Image (tube, rainbow, N blue to C red; front, side):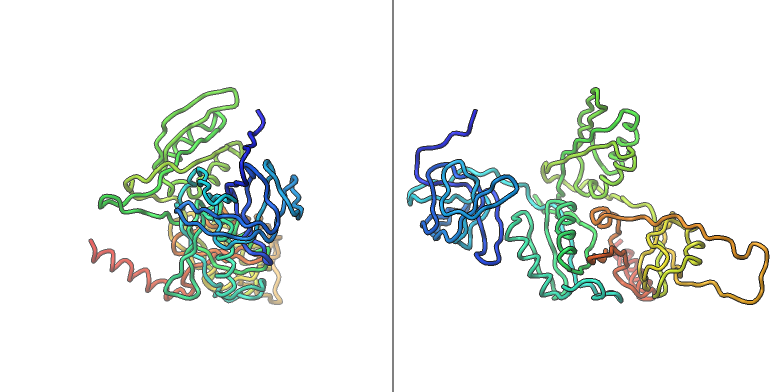
Length: 415
């Protein structure tokens, strides 16, 4: 049946928020009843009981993917209204002073947190145009105006900010948008947001649905088990198998990339927030170490040819690298210092087979989402308009060794 149009004065539930540099915040939603014109006074009723009035200074209507400026909108239209500062998703706009707020379905809470900081690496500022903490802070604040599931928190350092979000993909979309706008930023691995409930540490759990071909069912179930997931249902059908499980949000970080690898791209997953439950134990999602550059300069094919026997590489010949940058993956758990800038020394002597052709395996290319899920807690991703680089938090190798010894000493003292 078609939507019901109420015979009543103007009312609208705000379903989304947009931001316009000229008129500010714009509330978007479907008009349930009545009509509204440019210049009308409307009441803004917040979910927390607040009320304020605002004058409509701009109206726009949505037609497919297009938006048109209009002077009037009526019931059934999807419209955007500007003219107030505090309107938010879930608020009710109405002309009548005695109107009641419309019911709103609560959104899921933020469950992960990531660190955004100014790029302080040796190659900072060579690619992007917006690199200062003030520009990054303003951009993050602007994002929270149109995305209520995100929030930004300051830290003791003026160059570092904490961003709460629903998941790593949500932040990956923001990072991709920022890099296209010319930003350079350092980001950390996502960490979950814990809560203290009845004196115990609780963590967010999600319900996950994974649809895979039957031939890959065993490996997928084993991976879910390693990530502390508990299978609640398995359903066989003509398209394969659908596995339903309950898993900590920690276990979901990086799982999508593993699923693509395990099922040769045939796996499909979706998940939604379930609830907070008691902490379910330690979890290790990355079993490998890294190859860490010791020198700054352009990577050389001669050096990479030797290094590819040690692990998989993330850089190609000619790429600029610096000390402390992660240039590859080491099959062992330890980090291995290497020199990718070493060139072949030439002399006037020749021997048979000395000038053999160098055959390099193409480097692994990462998307932003895969990159932020791949790094470890002591690593960062350097996001610029044209590059994604992995690096250690502490670039100097001697300082990293001192920090490792100090962390071990603190751990032993606590034991």
